[in-house]
Length: 125
Length: 166
Image (cartoon, rainbow over all chains, first blue to last red; front, side):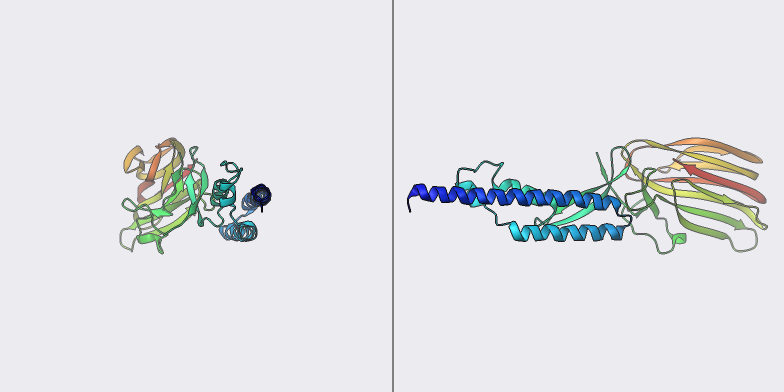
C-alpha cells in the first residue's frame, strides 16, 4: 500500500471516529439536559437517587457502545488539535459523570444564601 | 462563593453530626441554609418547652420542627415556678441575613433573650409583661453558628410565646 493510500485510509478512519465522537457527545448532552429536567421534577431524595441512577446507567450504555478512544489516530493524523482530539472527550466524560469515576452530590449554601447542589466526579479512595 | 453544607446536626465542637436519637439529652442542633430550606431537606429548629415545678418532676418537651416560620409558647401551669419556651438552631450563611422575633409574655419578671454565636444580641424584660418585634441579624458564617431565642416567666400564672420568621 502506498503512503498516499495509507494516509487516505487514516484520514477516513479519523473522520469516522470524529463523527462517532460528535454523536456520542450530542447524546450525552441530551441526556444531561433530560436528567436536569427530571431532577427538578423529583420531589424526594429517593426519587432523585432513582433519576440519577437511571441516567448514570444510560450514560454508561453510550460509553460502552461508542467509546473507543481515537486518541492515537487523532494525535497522529492531521486532526490533532485539542478541539478534535481525545482530550476534549475526557473532559466531557468527567463532567457528565460517566466512566471517569463516581459522582457525588453535595449540598451547598450559595452566595445569595439559597441552597444549591454541587456535583463532584472523581475517584474516591 | 458557595459554602459546603455541614451537619445535618452540629454542636459547638463538631460540625458534622447525625440527628440525635433522642433530642432531649443532646446539645446538637439542626444546621440550616441561612433562613432557607436545603434542596432536599426542610429548615428545622429545636423547640423546647420547659416547666420547672416546685414539688413535682420538671416537665420538658423537646422536638425538632420545620420552619423557618415557627412558634413556641408556654401556658399557665399549676405548680410551676418558672416556665420557658426556647427555639434553637444553627445556620450557615454566605452573607449576612436577618430574621424577626415576635414575642409576648406575662407573669412575674418575664424576660426574652436572643443569642447568636454564643453572644447576647437582644434582651427585653419587665416586671409583669413584655411584648414586641425585633429584627435579628445573622452574620455570614461558614462554620455553623448557633441561635438561641428564649422567653421565660416566673410563677404559675404566666404565659409566654415567641415566634420567628425570615
